Structure formats: structure tokens, C-alpha cells
Length: 310
Image (cartoon, rainbow, N blue to C red; front, side, top):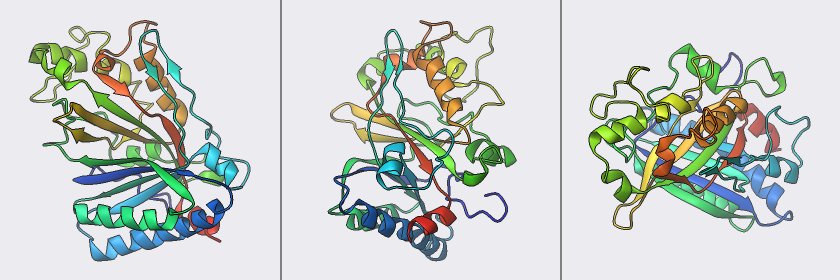
């Protein structure tokens, strides 16, 4: 639920059965502002229509804007306090790379038809002004598991905490009700992963595979994913990850998507994972999971989008 009197985009919902993630880059300055105004106006329309037509399907679309696009489009200053170009997080063995992107769309619903239709409308609106550089179709796998077979999102906040950790509050009044959005597209080496025994896989995650029970600190390896990606109960993010890919070509992956009130929480998590604690003790899951993208966006409220649309 958004803060009182603020009409926020739907960043707090839980993962749906179907998702399309799209990243767009403007091809030049000439048509960018017009196309952006058009797509901003569409956001309220598409979401209102979804609420009326599919009230039970949890259908929505969320748009994020990058630091580069914010400047390119001449949007208001000062910017959201933590909006900047994402800087790579470099460890001794693995790197969280940084990639470009101007706009990000997170389209989700229990009916895949809705996702397809909204992706088509967004494409029509941006055609001629921007190029889609990523389009990833995600799906729900069993009981919210990643394609690696383990439950994903166990550490997500719930109840009032979800808003506290997922939306900007009074610390940045001009952008209250907005959210930082960080995405990474990971590809998994399933051949290598499947060569591990279940016991070895559980040590990578620090959890039981079947029942999703976290290992005790006495048993859990210090480089387990749950040991390094969880940076404390007072520093959480709202994850909405989805699996995707092509099994025959061994190109299965996880689209990592985080909504957060502070991007510094995400940076701390990535530093723990890629650099390690202590340095060199990196997240073991990275030996089987390679990030191919990494981009930070800001998710404005619907009120801001209405202003941007002119």
C-alpha cells in the first residue's frame, strides 16, 4: 500500500505467474521527449484498465527511468538522492557488470495475454524513438522457485515492512512514494549445477532444497548465498525475481529485480556477494550464475508520471 495521498506505481505486489521485462534505449534526442510523454500518459491508463478488466489477476506495469535518461529528457532537478549510473562491483573472480538502459518496464499478470498486449502497446508508443535492447519473458516455476530448484524470495519483507523497505519515505520528500529499481539478468550453468549433489547444492544456498529451511549459522558455509545476500533485518529489499530461458541451449536464467527505498542496501548486498566477506569469500552461487546486465532505474509515482506527460 502506497503512502497516504500518494499514488505510487505497483512496486509492492508479489510475483505473478507471467512477466515480461523490457529495457529500452532512446535512439536520439529528436523524438525522445515526445515518445516519453506518450508512454508516461499510458502508464496510468494501462494500470487503471487492468484494475477494471482483470481485478483478480494482479495485472500491472511498472516503468523506471535511468539516470542517463533523466538528464537526456530534461526531467526536474534535484534528482532522487541515490539515482546515478550503476558502477560495476568488481571482485577477484566475479563482477556485477554495469549496462546501459533508459527505460525499464516490468509487466506482470496471472494471464500471459495481458503481458503480451501491454508489451505491444509500449512498443507502439516507443517505436521510432527507442530500441528495445532486452525483452525477457519470465514465468512462475512451481512454488516460487528459481530454475536452480530453490525457493526464491524467502527473505522478502511482508506487511508494513514491505512499504518501508520498498518505497522512498521522508528521507527524500520530493520523491516520496517512488522507488529505486535495480535489475540484473543472470544466466545459470545448469550443466555444472546439476553435477552437484543435493547436499552440495544446499550448501551453496544455505537452505534445504525441499522444505526451504535455513541452515543454522553453525552449519551454514560462510560463502553460502543466504549468508552473504542477506545483509540484515534492518536492510531489506523487495525482490520480484522470475526464471526465464531456453532449456535446450542451456540458457536458463533468473531475472533479478529489486525495488528498494535506498539503493545503498542493494550495493551492500552486491558487495558482499561479489567482493566477499571477508574479501575473497564471495557468494558461491556466482560460480553457477553470471550477470549479463546491471542497471539502476528510478520508479516515479503516477503523480510524477502525469506531470512528465505534460
